[in-house]
Amino acid sequence: MDGEDAADAWFHALSDRTRRDILRRVLAGEHSVSTLAASYDMSFAAVQKHVAVLERAGLLTKRRQGREALASGDVAAVRSVGAMLTELESLWRGRISRIDELIAEPDPRAEPAPPPHIPKD
Image (tube, rainbow, N blue to C red; front, top):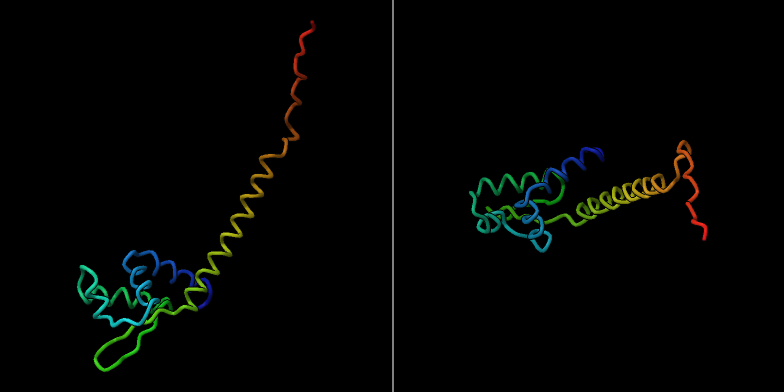
């Protein structure tokens, strides 16, 4: 998956509140998918789908232990998301600074303002 595809997958995965909560839980420690499912007011299959989206985005990994599927957060992938967001923030801060500079520059096409009227005493 190239960088742009990865970014699309990350944003899609993180766009859902339940997936963000699942990610927080598995970053704190390994959880079985059935334990995760018990925490939500939705079916086990729905939680499995959320986990699958996070797994496809590379934000968590699953492993089998007997009949259980155990999910763990991928800290390196989450750091990559953070680095990408920091890069985007820097880009936009630079653009905003440039806009501020352009706004502050006088318009060379504008007519000069007349001198202020100073009343004589």
